[in-house]
Every structure is written in C-alpha cells, then in structure tokens.
Length: 317
Image (cartoon, rainbow, N blue to C red; front, side, top):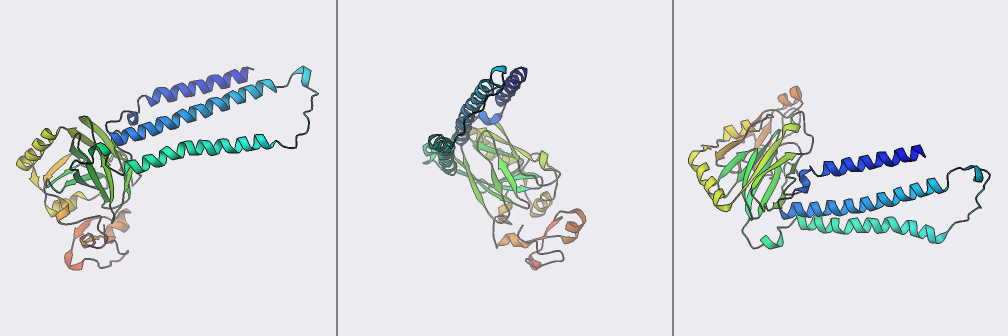
C-alpha cells in the first residue's frame, strides 16, 4: 500500500511540474493565426493524453488493489479463459479511435499552415528571402532593397511569406510565437507564410544541429505597425551602408555576428535556392574543408565556375 501511495504521489508531482513548466513555454503565447493553430493542436493533444493517462492510472490502481494478494485468497486459482471476442475488439478499436482523433486535426493543421490565413488572403504579402549560414540568419527584402542579419522587421496584420534556403548545411527556421519550424536547404526553396497580429519582439532560432556554433544561432522578429515599417525602410535607405559582393561572401564564413543592416541584397549576385544557375558560381575551398572539417572560405570565381577541385565538387552552395 505504501508503494502504491508513493507511486501516486510521484505521478502527481510530475504532472504538476509539467503543467507549471508549460505555463512558461512561449509556444502557448501565440501572436498570430498560424501559431494559434499549433497551440490549439497541442492543447487538443494534451487533453487526450491527459484522458488516456487518467484512465490507465485508474485501471492500474483498481486492478492492483482488487487483485492484490490477501490471506483470504492465497489459494485462489482463476478459471481458465479461452478468450473474449468483445473485449478483444474493444481494445483493438480504442487505439484506432485515438489515432483518428489525433490524426484528423493534425492533417488539417498541416495544410492550413501552408496557406496565408483566409482573413488575410486578399492583402498584398511582404516577401522576405531567408538564407541560413553558419551561424547566422540573413534576411533579404527584394522589393525594399534591404538586407538584415540576425533580425527581421515585419508589419503587423499583413501576411509575410518567408522564402527559405541555405548557404550551406540544412538548418531549421522557427519562430515559436508566430509559426512552426521549417527546414532550410541549399539549392532549394521552401515557403513559410506568417502573420503577426500584435506588435512586439519575438524570438527565433535554428533548431537543427549544424556544428559547434548552432546553439547561439538565434534571431529576433520585430513586428511593428505598417506606418512604422515604412518609416524603418526609409531610415535604412538613409543611414545604412551599401552591401558589397565581397562583404557578403565574407559574412558567409562560419562566425557569429550581431544585428546588421544594409541597403541592397545578395540576390543580385547569388540565389542559394537555384538548382543550376548563378549559385554554381560559388566555389568552396577544398583545402579549408580538409583542414577544418567545413567547406571553408567561399569565394567568387566566375571564370572557373562549376569546375571540380580536389576534394569533390562543392559548387552550388
């Protein structure tokens, strides 16, 4: 009996810790419709997990107590059972029903997350190209002709479409309060639509391990009013430095950078999502690769673009 009470107490403490810690998780503080979809899905799953846990725990306690060894039943031998089709059908159907209950809203949510929310479908989206590099995030505004590093400014109540790619290894783009995570991969492009429905600064990071510096590979999303966004664009063009091609290639080296802002984007020289175009003009130094375990210094060499070097053909990054 003491062991049973100890088990119940331990389980209760674990549940209490889970609930208390969950209150601090930013994934439950959604600031946009996509994040709210995920929050609702998590809550729906937690409800059913809680129901299953309570039922299993109740059955466990009932059976342990009812069929415990006692002096009055020490010689009891249960009758031989040949099987019960009704019970067997029930315990087969219950898991199927649980899977369907969790699967249907999950599939619906996945499809919904790929589209601009219906209430914003008629508005002109802001397109931002996102390029991941070890260990930094590069944001390019092609229409505004602006490029930022490790932070992105977006207007509230307007759809934003992130076009995701990578300048090297595969990484994962995640803004918990605005959207789910999506991978960035070299030579291909994925899209992530979001809408921020309130102003504020939101945390974002890489969640895919890609080397010793991945832990600090974070960025911030600054959601401001449309008026303040336009003011920010004007200020950047007035005060920020011009982005040069040589400077951009230097930024791609494995390093940690602070928040940086430039006029111009790297899209005029290279598109890391391109399968066979100008992305292949970037050649990776094989000597640096062998010496440091990373496809080292990236340099621009249009005359030798696409050629193979010792250590393999690393073009296309």
